[in-house]
Image (cartoon, rainbow, N blue to C red; front, side, top):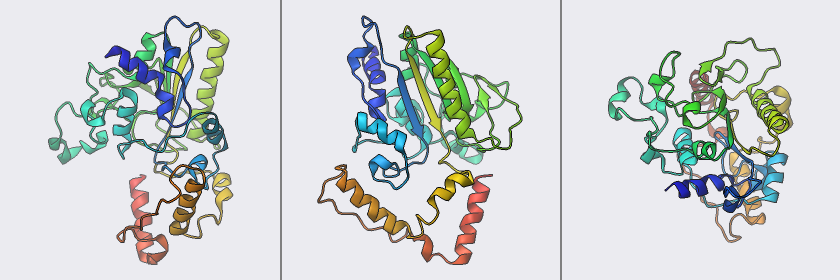
Length: 311
């Protein structure tokens, strides 16, 4: 079982559809072992990224994909916590107590869940734990969202926080989402209290932190100690808070409506060889109404809903 976990950890980047590495490289008799970086993006669809046919410009990810592998048959759990649990353990989310997100076991809904719901079992090892045991430096930067609700407050148990699950260092946020301009930041096992400059954005901060960790590690450890970095960004998750200079780059792009965008992406995916040339685009579900078909009142209700959801 331990060997299979090691193989899973070695193939972790392969599962991200961004790169590939050889499982034999984790062998302890090799002088150089690969550094591993996983980039986890919240609420990003299969065809959103440029190398998968999307109109969104993702040049750096596209370059990674061009040098590695792109997968077109893979599985997620449709919600973030269950998917993250599966990614980190190599098991189905249900088998490690993550049928959904921890937030669902709140208030009156708590009675529908077992007492151990949203607690990773103690005998389940994460990829970070496996790699840590093999001498890797392990860091998590960004989102975790694998904490039961009764362990979120200051002074409560930290059994399901990153440092107790194999990470040497954690910088990011504990729950499903946070304000991109004034986030609820966490470092290791404690919440941070800090003032944010006017030009602050969480995603830029997380990327800077990840880069800094790699640079400092290279100076202090060189090639003697490999590292595992999981960079988990939440910028595509609600609340959608994009700096104007970035949003302006897509002015007018979506004026044609989602149906046209969907067809364009589908044809581009065929041209990229991601799906068979004879694939047929299934019709949009009749219940999924196009934005342009909504009345002004319906759009206002939806906008209000998003404001409430985002806090």
